[in-house]
Amino acid sequence: MPTLDFKGKSFVYAHHLSVPFRELVIDAKKSLPAKGEKPTLDDNLVIHGDNLHALKALLPVYAGKVDCIYIDPPYNTGNEGWCYNDNVRSPLMREWLKKSANPVEKEDLERHDKWLSMMWPRLKLLQELLSADGAIFISIDDNEHHRLRALTDEIFGEQYFLGLFCWKTRNTDNRVKSKLSIDHEYVLVYSRGQGLRGRVIDRSDFQNPDKDKRGPYVTDPLTGKATADRRPNLHYNITNPENGDLYKPDPARGWITDESGFKALLKDKRIWWPASPKTGNPRKKRFLSETEERMPISSFWADLKGQSGADEVDQILGERLFDFPKSVEFMSRVIDLATNPNSIVLDSFAGSGTTAHAVLALNKKDSGNRKFILVETEAYADKVTAERIRRVIRGYKFEGTQREELFREPLTWAKLKNGAAIIKKADSFDFLDAHRFDQIVRSVENGELVVAGEKRVTDKAEALGGGFTFATLGPEMSLDKLLADGLPTFEALAKYVFFTATGRTLSDLPRQKSATAGFIGETDLYRVHLLYKPEKKWLQSNDSALTEKLTDEILATNAEKKKLLVFAAAKFMSQRELSRRGVDFCQLPYAIHRVLGD
Image (cartoon, rainbow, N blue to C red):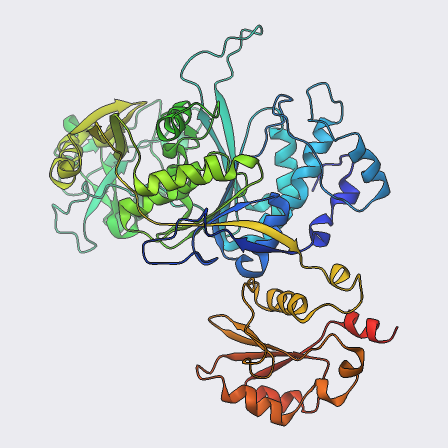
């Protein structure tokens, strides 16, 4: 497969592996947990910090568990003010970084290399976080689209590229000297799993007037798309065996199958016959039992209102803070395509927080339990990103009309022929949702029937409910740093081994006098013990080893029968015996022993 080469690639190729782990530190004052709850890293998350380090911090708990990833990275237009400053350990890269301290501008001849160097390690970590059936969506425009596609093909695999959504981002002309108004952007989609969920198919058309044993069905045309000179085998006369009626092929189209194929359909009783040749042509039965629950997804989203996102942020926060944030309608569509009510959604370029808003709105709509994880690098993570989420959770001052799309259906010829059924479906929302809105509005947009609910709000927008924990990135979880001044303290080493073993941050250590056999903390699955003193003599003695007596003491405290992880310098029991008792012995990091040998 062809690959994309760029300056710095050889140095950032494995950079994601050398990024140090950091703690996720809860900021209780900036968090908004659900009523009666405390902030926890198991809740929805808003993380303030470098997104490369934040993604690495999420790995121990969320690797392979995120169902939907959406990112809206800098488009590298040259006007965004972003800097490339990843700490890549290479003298050549460090020299390059000295020149990159200033924002990347349009005149920078290496701006594409810098953008690709910035994206590569982040995409590699996102790949590790994505679940086996998950999907990643990446927004981009023409500035980097072709380079990004080559990059993502290499990282995620060309065979897992599902497609490219193109959507209309502007409602007015973009007046530029070139006279070409760029009104669209793209969304690249990759998935290793079952793909995306299409819109639910309206099944009200399926009927069974002739009592077919295979159940309800609709009929599809038998006419094809080939002229007689191109495909003569598709042009033949059809006779109704019941009454002898003759049906001739359309000279410009023919039938969808040759004569032998038609005979097979006839034998299988899949042909629906009209009353006479004057009233139509024979058609093919398609049974409900053979029909997918969801319809294919259009790759062209012309119906979205691209500039409504800025108005939403303005309404919620009271000022125009972003030029082109994504709208809740846009993000709701993305999330709905790739999630179920219990999915995890990650956005590591969170911006105004639209992704969290959309998750909360969808949960409110279908009583779902989707979870969001947002990462924002900029200083406005609290006052803009998190504040928006706080306001939509609680409700915010608003005066105007709120609109929620309830139903959308393409108006095909087959649908129009059965117009009464689709009108009945559209009218059903008067009964189902009228209590939630002031009026139910029906319209035709770009060849689709759209039903939406509109509600006039004069005081406060409806609270969506939910909660989140605000977290920052703590110090590096690095043995090199721990051992810089000799043996680390008990607390420092306890936090390190607990995080590397469970992926969770150890916020409070038990008091050592009351802790049994070095107990330092627990999760839903594990209890963790650390046998350690920052003393060379003690670590070299038998007192530092896990013995049968200590094992019995540890087991006596394990009332919930959790898996036990015990870190120690040595053990005086076989691992087979320890495993039989539900204990995993974990050797203290080798670097500790290196210090002991100095």
